[in-house]
Length: 590
Image (cartoon, rainbow, N blue to C red; front, side, top):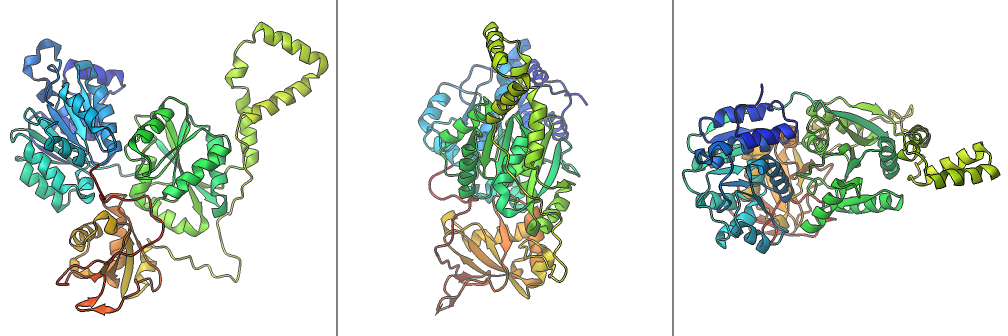
């Protein structure tokens, strides 16, 4: 179905970008928005929803007074506001709306943490049409009267469920309360839990609910590969995969900041042009890294999940999971960085035999069927180098006169075979040398050796076998403002269990450990992996992994809390190296 009638400048922008037909979410939103209704939309990331709400609010922003030119009025106080959970997503939304509204004279301003708030204030004072920002920074600008909400005709909440999971409810309610009551409100969320429905009921007027079904199988433009590896050879396999694909832009995902730093250094040392993205970088450093990838100065990005949210690189054709994703949702989010806008992409997972069962469960949940193989060998890479050499621009360009003269001199002292061998050697020196790697095969244990798989913290059968109560670890702690009153609703909603099935809760400095009744533990683990934000993760603890109790204080062991306790208690304790995932808010606003 072609796009419905749109203002001429926006139709031209879509045509220039190669948009012929709307995606399902775009078609549904445009049809519903024609009736000037508030919308409550459940749609997945990557479904085209940014363009959907950009088009849906076009008639409200341009208005009938624009005449035949259908241009936006001169920039002043913003006409639309988009709220996004993370800096990267907000900046991606800004880029999408910029090209969409550029032919109509649109000005789009981003307000995100990590950027200079004074510069943002000056840009809004100079006039704008659309403001895109994160909740904390938008609230700051409202409180400082830098952001004038009086002319707002449309407000969009993008990935609202994630914003609530990240603790932005108070900021969102403050922002919505400051906007005109007659505005149109579009609320987009991957899931629609009760908290989202309550938000919609309070701040929307007779909203139309749209449930856009996701794809029943993996993205058709992404080819999945599962590569068997020896754990100690991970870096070598990553190198060979990069050399094998020779992608214009590739991204390699790791689970921690330390792993990102180590792999970036290793690849740089071997001759790759590499940038890194992790939570320890400032926004200016992140922007510089992304710009290096866009203009071709860097071809490889090593990143964590949190830092890579919202990345959109048109030339990205290869995603490598150096560390196995935590769940199917993270797998799809990572892989979705490629295979966009009709372009093909490849997603490669490196899987030691000890993690194969967990990987297969993840593939089943994500509904993808990868091609299994061993890693590309050094001989495979050398063979590809020979095939690619003749297609190098160096061979297709006509030689200059000085080159012909030098060739004659060389032929007088060397045979053609010797010169060809020297040329091949020079060509190889421009490329990182491939590594010798091994294929562990299917990983069957030798006869007489137990084939019982190692403990897998997300395997429901193994979790159920642990006993009447199972301890889990959550990657939120005291530094993330974790509190039982906040954690309990999130655990029950995402885990699909009742409060009575949660036992003791112990909050540490960087993590939380909690107890789930044994008959609900497997169901909880499966539901938690399937629902909600990938930044918030849990894993079951093997064996007697319950936190050691301190001396009992009045009312029970110190540091423990349960849903039935009269007072919520917390205990801070030093823990191991901090994981990259840190969805909670610490100090300041994002």
